[in-house]
Image 1 (cartoon, rainbow, N blue to C red):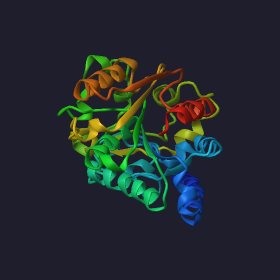
Image 2 (cartoon, rainbow, N blue to C red; image 1 turned 90 degrees about the vertical axis):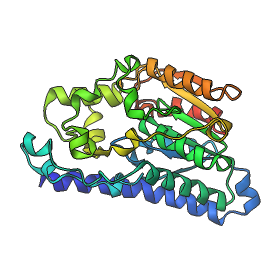
Image 3 (cartoon, helix red, strand yellow; image 1 turned 90 degrees about the horizontal axis):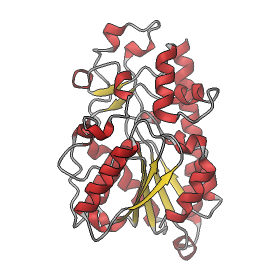
Length: 319
């Protein structure tokens, strides 16, 4: 019964956010093309274990500034999330949870890219533009690949404390670098990624140490009373393929798109040293189009604790 309540709560919340965004899209579709073309638009892409629900506080703040906002769940997330059967068993049977193959193991980086570009195309077809694509955390991987595949469709990229891998090295390998030493999320993983095909967390844990570890990794600066609701909506499995697939970024395509990077100073998942490494490698690849870097005083997910301040900054960065 506990699991059914958890799923119901997650799905209802995801559906509510989706309905609000659908309404926003419908409004744009009905507006005259000339009027729509005057509106800036941003596609918000969520990170690992999250869905579009994570932007619920941020979306209306951006809309109030006259920015059209689109966000949807990446494949395998939100209403598309699927759960290992062992996750529903409480108390958790570690031997089963650590070995059961993930139902999301087949979700690929290209699946993400296709979904992002479809969202961009939908906005463009409705007459909106210029179109910015923002990626948080893991979403920096697919937005990089999306810009590489369709640079003319995206006016600007914004990386929010995100992975920005532009070398032949896949994103997951960066977590082994010295610059990632402040990331302790790996200690919370409950299965070998090669065994289950996903990065697996027990987001329904009652272990006090694990709860604190999750909070410190994702949103250390939100009040303790707020975190249970966030954890309640997080999913246990995040598809692993995106972390193991190079983005294919080139100076000609990806490097031609304007980009900004917001580095969260208290980030325990993509630590500041790793942020700077991504920016350095990006600027080496595309030295004539350098990254517009901004620091932001928050933990990894500022849209939870500081949505107003984040919206103020984004309003100055969105194309």
